[in-house]
Image (tube, rainbow, N blue to C red; front, side, top):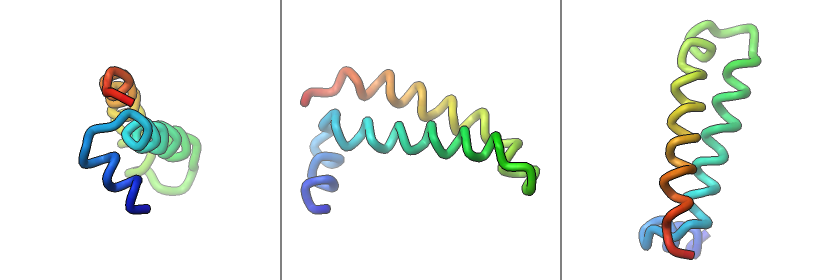
Length: 62
């Protein structure tokens, strides 16, 4: 856990790619659930933020 937070603070690729991947997965789950309209409404923007974030952090150093 400490290495994960340390990697986030030092702008390392691995931890930030994990955060971006979790955002993408969360957006897809929000898109597929049929119960809460607010989650469905914001699912596209969450997926988009995760995708753009993944593209940006893929240029971070290892």
